[in-house]
Every structure is written in C-alpha cells, then in structure tokens.
Image: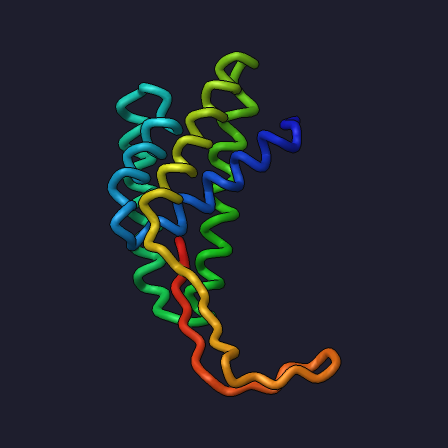
Length: 144
C-alpha cells in the first residue's frame, strides 16, 4: 500500500501526461514517461510509448467541451494506476528515485505548458455591500 505522498505524485504525473498530450510539451513528456515506466527495459518502454500514443489519439478524437473533459478524466485515472503499480513493486530506495523522476516530469510539463492567466477590468464597477455591478472585458489565458 502506498503512502499518501506517493499516490499524490502518481496523480500529478498522470495529470502531466494527459495535459501535455496535444501540446508542444508532448514529445518530452511522452519520452520521459515511457522511460520512467519502462525502467530501462526496451520492450516495456516501447509498450508505454504505444499506450501514450493511444492516449493522445483518444484525446484528439474526443473533440471539444464536455466530451474532452470526460475523456481526460478517464485517461488521468488510467494513467494514475500505472505509476502507482510501479511504485508499489519497487524497493524503498528505488521507489523514492521513481517518485523524484515523476516530480521532475510534472515540473517539466509545467514549464513547457502554454501560459494562461485571467485579467478582469473593473474600472467602471459599482461596489455596494457584497455585490459588484460591472461591465467591461475579461481576458483569460491559462497556464497548462
């Protein structure tokens, strides 16, 4: 049974994989995930690459909106089990090494993700008690 911290690392890794599919970060995340999960075995690494390619294909065929969100949720759950299973099988010192590698993969995905931010313009707003009455523009840019 994995401790909560390792489960969180596996979840973050799965999120990085699914969020990177279809972005400029995909090539690096794809190869890094396959290397981590393959643990130096060429056959296992190739199998992971094929699974990763299938993930990207499923996301691309999902379209936009609620359909893609549903597919992302399913894929994140699917991908979370892979590093969890790997972590459970490893001795403690290797387990920590893999957790560190997964954390580095998550950081890589965050650095390479397109930036997103939100900007609200309340220059003509009226504030009364707990309400804000406003009109204006809202610009959204999301960091994924």
